[in-house]
Length: 313
Image (cartoon, rainbow, N blue to C red; front, side):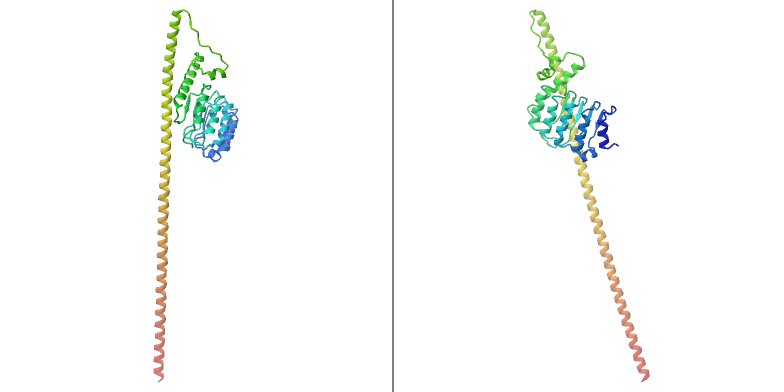
């Protein structure tokens, strides 16, 4: 397995074989998350091959958000960016959103489950404004409770339809928001009314058909986006529950280990105390036996002396 330094060097070398980089919960990366994020961002500045970058659960601090934003300003290859479950806050996410005014490649952005549980309204308003110009972002994974949620979803759906028409080689100019028209330097004038009633009727029918088609496409895209966001939320909940269960199991195992160690220590202490008591008792018995032997010896000596005295008499 490569070290974080080796991986960053590979990114900096613009290795064409490296198109997906997944550093999810990478222990080596997390040890110096800020320094590694900065180094990786610098390496990505000129990388033209990595399409998918996953930095989920990498303990990325909010201070590194500006570096990520600078990378998005310069990088033209990145399609999918996953920054979920890090420590990005309101100002950091605003900076990242602002970079999407200039970025023309990122289609999917995941910023769910930051340490700041509720994203500030500034973040929501920034994405709302950015999407007046950005036509590339077609999937935004986050969790917000804002009056702007529905409007932002409509803009995301619009982008999805624009990219669909663009890929199919169809005219997508009428779908472009005003900000995008200005950014692309496009002057668009809606078709003028015709004097020919029959032609007008046909044009109106065609316009109605296109509107109905667009509405159906937007509804389908919105439904798909809602399903994906629901799925992402469910997956996040499952990960959190799994992490909680893992933590509970670890705490239980630690408690059982501590209890076992305490029990073993108490048993050892009891055994040691019993051994000391047995040794003490043995010593007392030996002392009693020695005292008894001395007494017997003294009595024997006294008896011999008495007998000798009697014989002399």
